[in-house]
Amino acid sequence: MTRIMSLLLTTIPAGHGKALRLKAGQAVRLINTHGTQVVDCWAWNAHDLDEHMSMEASRVWSQRLNPIIGDSFVSTYRNPVLTLVEDTSPGIHDTFMAACDCHRYRRLGVAGYHRNCLDNMFEGLAEIGLTAPRPILASFNIFMNIAVQADGRSLKTAPTPGRAGDYISLRADMDCVVAFSACPQDIVPIQGGAANIPRDVHYGVIEDSFPAIPPSQPWVP
Amino acid sequence: MSSTTVTIPARRGKAAHVKQGQIVKVINTHGDQVVDTWAFNAQDLKEFMSMEHSRPHMLKTIPIVGDIMRSNKRRPILTLIEDTSGGIHDTLMAACDCHRYKFLGVEEYHDNCEDNLHAAMREIGLEAPETPSPLNLFMNIPVKPDRSLSFEAPVSTPGSYVALRAEMDLFIAFSACPQDILPINGVGHMPTEAHFTVE
Image (cartoon, rainbow over all chains, first blue to last red; front, side, top):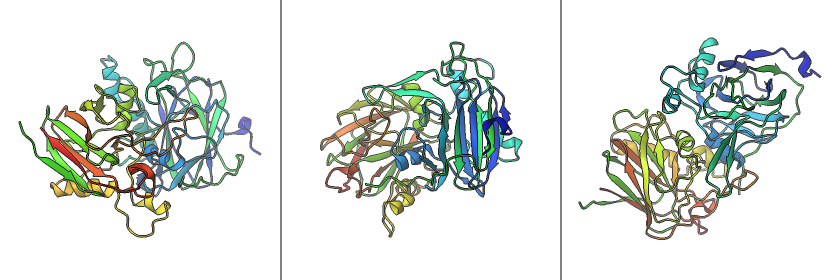
């Protein structure tokens, strides 16, 4: 079995984005190298970029706010795109907050340009020669800590509780394109550690060294 | 100023133009009906109400009176100014679509909120650029402590309503959700009409 030591790793520089292609059956292991970084993630059908991973359809599919091992993310056509097959982190992720964008930072009082996840998505895709047909998609916010309070509706944003070297692996259920952004947020305290400083993360593509878990079935009554 | 009451027929959609500052009252006429709601900037339909952009600013999964729904450019688009329905709505779940009913075991065509949105917009001569994640008025999706979700019957009562103020000129679209397999439109599983006014 390939272990993480021998995995060929690509760096996602702090505050930047990267995209990659996955064949159905491959997985991408995303490593929280410093343990403090939130990473936004998007995915598209490699053969039809109009079909993309949908957070709102995935919540209907799995009946959960965020996935646990064995849960699949489905597309806008409700086909499984990615399945969470490994997660060594505390399992705290977010599916319901929009990726940060230029408007977000303007409202946070930033006067000049601030790097942001939405632009990173486009930059990552452009680097591999692709353009997203829809400008704005809801993101899977890996390691992001948004707690729902006891009233069932209020939200509390907190630093990610990760540890250095935590990783998750997402198995492709279709040929797909995946984009990541090492979130540049340094104003709202979502990155772990007291400093709230964006850090590098790493990913590697793995062929078989992950648990064989079939795509999850839709929840039905 | 008086206003006309518009029917959202059971299992169907309806759209209308709303000027900035006008108030849209969405009435749960029979009490148990979920109404999927979308709003599009009248000047640029590619700017629309976005649940994922609204949540980080209101810091809630469900808006309460005073909360502002935002567009995908994070501009205020609708403000919830009155709610007599019990305050239970949903921002998490995708609109039902043909794919949804297929995996619920329906083999024939089933009316669905996605098609209702697009039909309602076409009825007023417009083409919605996509199917944004809707504001599901009166829809009851409790979040459990383990972060799992469930589909429950509405808590609203007949004639209860929400009032939404338009923060820009917009087109509002509704679908009286045709879901009759899950108890989301009441334990009787019977989709009904709902109504709205603009004034």
